[in-house]
Length: 614
Image (cartoon, rainbow, N blue to C red):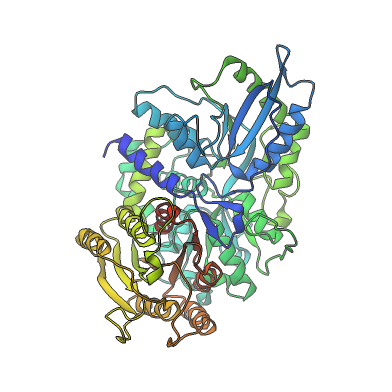
């Protein structure tokens, strides 16, 4: 596969991740380029007679930049040759913006105006953009971007676990993670067998800046270098073995660290935090928010901060780490005029002023201007160290970065997944615009998602509805394709999907319980074991064995009692009638995540986002 097709596949996944994860409110954007909030600040109103500087910014900083833009627009310095300047930030997730720029960014439609300034979460996205354009014979669109605000990647560990490894006196890094991942004793090697095996929370690097940074950092650690990574480094057998062994400890992947932090907070509340995850690769700002009692980083109206019983501490890997630098890229694009570039430079200078840089601290980030001192909340009281990291790593060359992502597909932990699809009568309803039914769109999305699995992943197909084999049959589920390596049955899965038709009711609770139990009984400790459950309705089986309370009790008991056999249920709430609240509770009970596809037209993107967990 050439670099162009590889990068296209990668960025296709990034765009597909643009969905909302249930349970994080409407305040989280999953594409990412970072574990970014989606709070869309109200943009300033264009006066109509100024040089307009549109911005596409990763959403964790939209509120701050919107405020700064208002102040700048009203200032005396917002002029170029006597013409006023109007800066207009808009929230756009890093990966999605990068793909739009690679495609030339349509000048009309739902994506918003073409930007003059692009500020992704990390400069790595700029490197990928230039690589894509170079492969297409196009010149670079971005140069060196000046950082606006910074946050380093850390290994977040529950404090007792970090202490067992020698924290804070003993330097800890990816080599220690590797040792724990390879140990048959797990935490028993450190005198704590009750904590079980070492479990790592780590996001999918095709979707998340923290996952991408973690992949780069662990690869540097494997090579023993801090200078640069080369294609020759990636080809080394010991480097590949290091990566494979690290990935073997992963709980599951995903498109955002918020899944891990929200699940960790729930487990902390019930006293099981130390058996959910041993460490999570996150950005420092996310750890600060967690210890403040705000694991998703967003305070809803009336929400109270609840500090964790077991706080997290930041391990700054001794081998080095990377910063998410939130650069300002003034684009070299044919739609950007010289006047707009001059106006953009004025705003870039404005946000670098010390009084404006001090404001980034309020959000838990470090100032991008090195002349501004780091202060609260970057403090030991919140589990972080302003004197760290001691070693900073560089983003690899774009071609190496793309190869690194391609190799990760073969190194990552493999999966064992049962896809469970609702074929109740309502799935025959129109999906919205066009002639397709909800079932037809779901089948198309599920079929397309099969390409995201590696041949060694094991995938099966189950359908459910009441009376599947005819009136009075009492059959509410059928296994159409057994769970087996997908490389041997991808065509069979597609064929069985294509033959699905809507039937009757929705025995949601019984089918969820049975699917969960099936995967527990067939658990493979070398894989991520999961159920993907798509439904467009609510439980309506009067003859079922489970009510909601019984189902949740069964799932929770199974999750807590089977720490060595964790099976996670990832529900998809499909269509406006789906019981999203109940599906979120099902996900919570198994330490997974629920996905919202209330707009049937989004199901393709949602399916791909779900598959990012594997």
